[in-house]
Amino acid sequence: MWILNRFLNAGTDWLLTPWSAASPWVALTVASLLAAGVLVVLFHFSADQQALRRARNRFVARLLELLLFQHDFKVNLSACGRIFVANLSYLGAMLRPMLLATVPLMLLFIQLACWFEWRPLRIGETAVLEVELNKSHPVAQTVVEVSLPGIARLDSPEVRTLATNEQAWRVRATGSGSGPIAVRVEGQTELKQLSVGNGMARLSLLRTQSSFWNDALHPSEPPLANAGPLTRIEINYPARQLLFWGSEIHWTIAAVVLMMMFGLILGRVFGVQVA
Image (cartoon, rainbow, N blue to C red; front, side):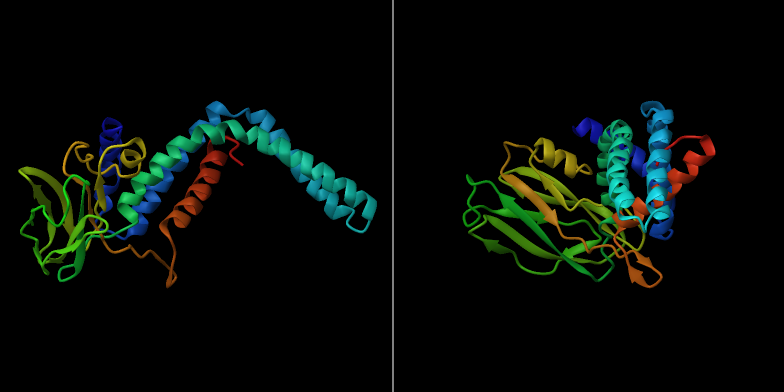
């Protein structure tokens, strides 16, 4: 899974890094346009365009029938049944391309979350660095050493939580850039990337031991060694705010709307039925 993640990371970074200094809307629009293009290609090669067009036209016709005879109860009742059947037929024609698009869309949104879900620390801001040890290394008896890059410093002594076998520090950003936090336990060192700045960057909140879902959901950094003393290293970056006309909107909603809009436009331009 990590090999696939490295390939996807490189492609996403190549696409979004040129826009990292601009508004997040610019990078999100570029990513949504590319995703819409991929969906249009999938629909072109996997969907029966004629069947999809017939099913859509049949569904629209049943809706018009309901509107035209809205004062006739018997006709309306039978029209509702025909609308239901037409809708099932339409959804059936959409099923295969949508199933094929599910995995690419999931991978895309996981990648985009690394750019849009959180933002880097600003100079002067603090974040909590947490490490979790495996059960064979009780936190009360285990020495954990932390070394920070030049862009940050420790802002508090360690806090140990015996119930969860965790240790935490408050980290304060002191300069712009990125660099690795080194966590050492019994001679073994693991790194966690830290980013500080005003632009956009690929961020990773969590490094954890390898499993399929952990590797899939946290693609930005390699997993921790499964046999090592650390089971988790986490830093809680602030959530990114995406504003639309003065109101906050979650980036996933914005991405879906943009993808739908671009998909309809590209589908019409290239003669591909996507809805």
